[in-house]
Length: 396
Ligand code: ADP
Image 1 (cartoon, helix red, strand yellow):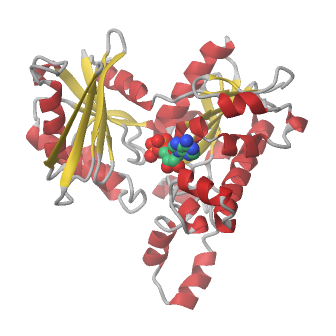
Image 2: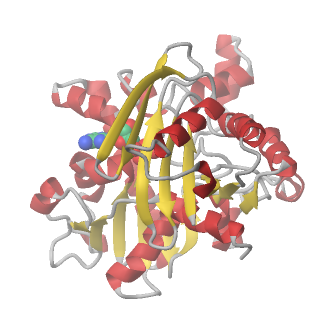
Image 3: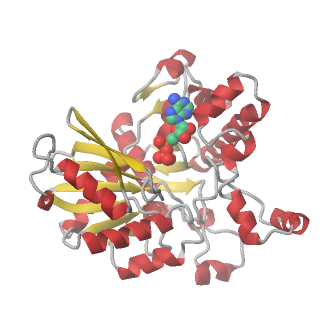
């Protein structure tokens, strides 16, 4: 069975194709600038072949068509025909209590649509693309993996806000948690790496979106993102946790509406908002090295918040066996890892500076004396979604 896993942005489509018997990744690729009226770069890496095309791509259905054309190319492709694709799996984000793995149908799309204002960066592009794909490829089952389900194991006191009780019951206002596929992957992987199925692991998924998750035996015990993916740690351009009552003051002083202010917080906040430079940590680190104070402040705020969550989770788990860094930032930024792990010897966390600077792939970056191991583990959310998609297709 072959499963295509799609990762959608409002103007981008990234994918991986897996053979599910061997779990081998057969191909990966991506298309940018979808629907922008300009030429898109359509890249496919199939085995050792890299195919690149430049073409105008009107929408996500056209993007998937382009991807399938590249994958079935008689010369360089890896599929004889599109029929070989058993399903397309989506790392979908939020459909409230319709959590878990679902065949994409009208109920699911409506649930996602009804929460578009709560997850504005994530739900609208997925719903739009899923509708287009349903129409264009009716023969390929579409499966949505809503990984809020991974956080179903969080105990009630850590799930609920201290808002009026009926908000949780009637409006489903609670800490749902996100990045479930990544934290699930790390939890499972750490069971193998630590040789224990009861390990206490703090997983730091740091990337365009970031969250920290406390896990015991691979099960989520608490996580930093709450009701929406806007919350928790500062994100690339989203604020993270914030006191909602500050909005009243800013509304009064600026005359802007709550919607305008929320849009501002979710597009001009986070690393971008503080640094005023970029939403990409690489640019911010470069500027900070050059002496830019706001760039340094953005890094400091981000790291302080990650440290704060690690501290909470050490308390919740009664210590930890491992702290894991993953995601684009977690896997690549020795600056962030060093700052987060500094002054943590009280908790038995001691980073090996040399290993931290040179590590590029999976491995331990703490000293031999460190009671808590610190790891870099590249995440693989797509294989989690592919496994879940295959389960649905097989009817398991
Ligand atoms: P997403 O959450 O969108 O999937 P990623 O997990 O790929 O994103 O993380 C993307 C982020 O990783 C980039 O915005 C960039 O800030 C950061 N990043 C990637 N490489 C490096 C690096 N070498 N040093 C610092 N940050 C990096």
